[in-house]
Image (tube, helix red, strand yellow):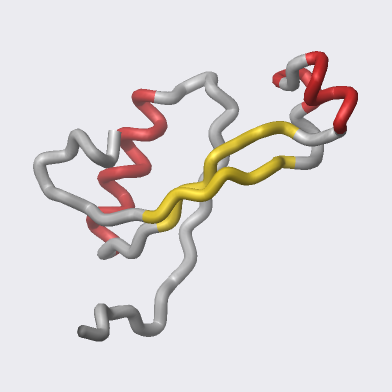
Length: 80
């Protein structure tokens, strides 16, 4: 979804493990280990971009159990 946008947005992704209340979405192997394989994406956006992407996520991934959060960034830039 992020790669398909007309407006190119850079992001970083990480393989992570989720722990918590999502037992109903876990595979049997994940239930045994007590953790769920997930992917974490991070990107730095304007407030308008953030709202647009969240609207798309809600539409495209409804019912998936995806979790997101937004936090303000005080400063961010490339150092070349």
